[in-house]
Structures are given as structure tokens and as C-alpha cells.
Image 1 (cartoon, one colour):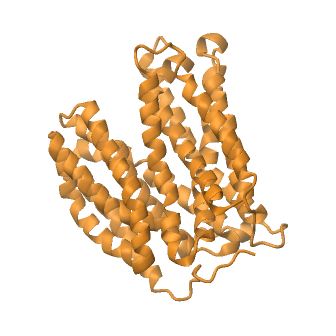
Image 2: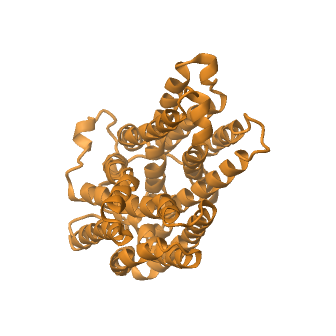
Image 3: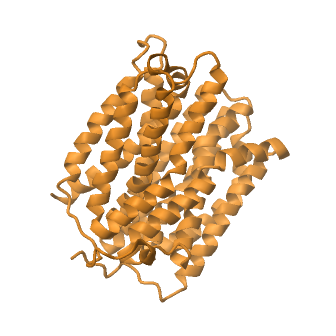
Length: 413
């Protein structure tokens, strides 16, 4: 199977993963009344979001399970496993009977399905990143490492668009199940495409213990955790919580969503360009040079995002994306190049998902609390700046540690 088909199968799976998360978020009001008691709509909606949060709580466990599989039995095995779990999860939601039909079993099964989704999400992003970076030529590692990020943005845009279409008033009551069903069919196709991928592992002795391979206290693992926090706080703070910020300052939901969509679309365009630039100047240098003005500008740009003016908010979003996308595109290649080959998938999966769950998953909540307490969008921007500064420090420090092995001379055997 050629590299184009392999990379397409990997990218498609990552798009599907984030498409499903975005779809669930958009359809949450319908899901609330379908799988929870109707007599308390507020409690039903809160329960829906708590169930959604359950998926994130399971992502570190998924990092352990599929990271271990990826290191011991090959990257392909982990990617096939994550896709199989995704098929089960999305198909279950598509055909799950309502609360009125099976009672309490409905929300329980929904919660289990989303827990499976969380398990596969961690494996999908991290193992895809490892596979793409390891198979890329040295000068193009940043370019291929940013493909999972682009897939995330594409999946979020696709899920939001399709979800909005299927919630229109002219749609039949059960039409919302169709996108989940189609997602399941597409996941089966992706599973088939991945079955022809090349598999490889660095570990010859398959009887090695998990304890001997997992080391989340090492500097490379700490870098993965900090950069996951950097990625999660900035991305979720801008593209997820940003809508709430703009709406709370007088912008309509439709205009706020349009501003976010423009930002995501620009991210899809800018990241690969940054990857190509990194092939000339180096990924670490580009990350450090671009992150510094990003950290300095965030407070004022967040104030612009909350101006209440569509034009000012749009310009602020364009500026934020222009500063956010290039360093974000470098993160996967920087992190993966520092981790030891034989335990790379495991340590990346665990460290990354701990950072993403603790810091990225809580970013919207922290942003909301900061805005409520200080009544200043600039303070929220400062919170994002702190995450960026910690990222700059760890990347700068490890870039000066010559003892860490890089991937420039890496060859698959």
C-alpha cells in the first residue's frame, strides 16, 4: 500500500474521531431528551455534558492500553484497535433505543459508548501522530506531524456543519441518528484501509512489563504533558470557549460560530504551510520564534474577541489563528523526536492525555471562572499566555540537551 493511501487512512480516522465529538456537542439538546428523562430538561442537558466529560476521563486509560499495544505489537495494531472501538461506539449511539423504550439502560449504554469513544480518541490522535512522524523524511516530520491537528479542525467543522443541518426544524425527529450511522459505515471503510498498512515495532521481546516501559517522570514525557496543556488550553480556549465569550459580550450565536469557523479554516491552511517552512528553518526554532509574540499578544487579542463587534472579533480571531497555528503544527514532531522509540507510543499516550485531560479538558471551565471573577477577557488571555510560556521554557530547555536522541537517522526495519 503506498504512502498516500496509508496517510489518507490515518487522517480519515482522526477526522472521524473529532467529527463525532463535535457532532455530539451540537446534538446535545436532542440527545438529552432522547436518552434522559424529559420531565427535567435542565438536568437532562447537564447529564448529557457529564456523560460527554466521561469520554475525556477515559482518554489517559486509552493512552495506556493502546500505547502499550502500539509499542509491543506495532503501530498498525493500535490504529486498527482504536478504529474498531470507534465503530462500536458510534454504531451504538446510532441505534440506541430511547429512554422511553428501555428506561435507565439508555443513559447507561450511552455513557459506556462515550467511555469507549474516549479510549479510542487518545489512541487515534497519539498513535496517528507517532506513525506519521516516524514514517516521514527528516525534513518533513513537522509537516506530517501537523496532519492530526488539521484533521481535528476539519472534523470539528464537519461535525458542527452536519449536526446543524440535521437539527433543522424540517428534519424528521430521528434524523439526527443518520450522521452517526454514516460515521459508523465510514469507520468500517477506514478499518479496511488500515488493514493494508505496514506494521512495525521496536521491541523484540514481547514479554516485557508495562512498568519497565512507562516513565512519565522523564523530561521528554514532561515535555509531552506540558505541550499537551499548551495545545489544549490554547485550542479549547479559542475554538471551543471562544463562542461563549463572544456571545456573552453581545455577538449573536450565528456570527460567533462564523468567526470560529473562519479560525478553524485558516488553521487547516496555515499549519501545513508552517510545516513546510519548518523543513527549512527547523521545527524547534519556528516554535520558539512564533510562540513568543503569541504569548505577548493574547491578552489584547482576547479583548478584541470580546469587543461585541463582528468585524473586530473576526480580525482578532484571524490574528489569533495566525499566531496559534504555526507553533501548534510543530508540537507533535518536537515531542515525538525526544521520546525513546521502544516506548514512544505508550509514554506519549499517557503523558499527552494526562496533560490534555487535566488542562485542556478544564480550559473552558477555567476561562469561564476567570471571566466571571475578574470581568476581563484580557485576564483570560493572560491565562493562555502562561500556558504558552511554560511550553516555550520546556522546548527551549530540551532543545539544548544534546543527549536526547533525535529521529533524523531513523529507519524502519
